Image 1 (cartoon, helix red, strand yellow):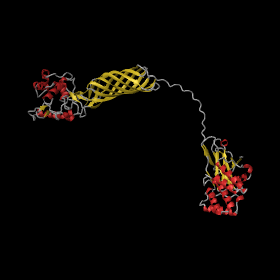
Image 2 (tube, rainbow, N blue to C red):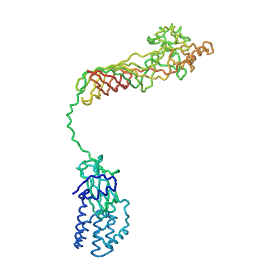
Image 3 (cartoon, rainbow, N blue to C red):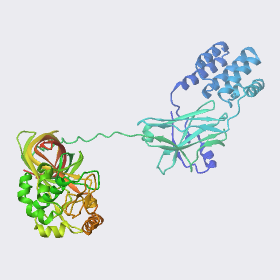
Length: 580
């Protein structure tokens, strides 16, 4: 049975006055647990003691204390009563003191009720307090705030006081946190120096409770407290109630994004491949300053390459002698056409410069493609690959100029400018098959496939030497007037006289070659290598349908180009897609 009233304990004096009226404080409600069994055993043994049934009383107390921890303050009243009964039954002071020591260890402030107290017994308790080695608690009221993490749980409060005098009481004042009204008061249930009470879940409503506790003597004088009205303690209640979730409407099925029927890809790309073979524009170059043996054959070839311009070279020595007579007479000093025709080798003269095998770039190409879906996930398309940028930087004499103009402006110019030669347009085309991966619900789809076709492309190749702007098949920065090896030979177009190196003509040739070398642009010549004829390979990429008729794509193509200068080429293409 518990009653509650509402008080405003602003001052301890007001609390004492309020507590003097028993109507405002109830006897409290203890929460039922194992301690009720201890209290029942105590009351039963006390009744047996009053009826002088001492042995049954001791037996009942021993049974109740069996298994209890020695420091549980709830056992202190039972241990105290046991000591009193031992003294009453046997008068054995040592056994009584030992029993009191057990009681003191459970609760240092354990007291003997007035009806059981005698001077001798009190002296034995005082002695036990000294013999126990225990010390008095530093706090008059000891308490740990209760809490709960569940909904609908009662809050159980327990307080251990340094002493609750005969006629005294312990009061709990509480209210729901956030409530600005008055605190409710509850008289806590006392047993020994322990006081307990509970606030029902129906009262706190699963909200935190703020509270404080006071201990009073028989005259309603406050002996100690835990918390206060202006600084209450808080008992946490963490209740998370699961509210029933409203039934979600059924989601519509995901939209289908089946592949379009028509694809128009506008691809822009770059590539990298293996360069090998010979350069497109650069004839085999001579180096009279190096280890190369420059002789009449090279002189004859250099003159033929220059004079032929865009026409074919002489096919053999006989053609050379028949076609080159006037040219040799005008520009071939110091040798005769017979000498040069005899030394001429048409095959070697027509050879282009070999390139070092290695990786080379195909800087930029345009890759348009038109395809149609031929199955749920298959697309067949036709494509082109147009080489838009080769990156070549090849400078030479002007092959379209007349021989006199070219001889004056390019060949004998100490600082020839030349013109930039560009390789022809290269393109390839073929068929491509792509298989799209993933489900139709996805806008972003990966694909794999293959391609085959025909055509050519070019790879950008640094040649490792400078340009030949005066057209004599010798890089300008390696220009020399003569080859001074085992047999002296003039380098075309210089009129060096090997028989009279000190002559004005020979010295003029040396100065002329030196001027070309000094004025030469020493930046590296960039030529190209043409590969292809046919192409075959695989493709991997993605298609993203950004809108109904528009998307983006990207793909990586790995192909073999053959048979002319067979090579591996890897292309990366990206761009927009128009779909229908």
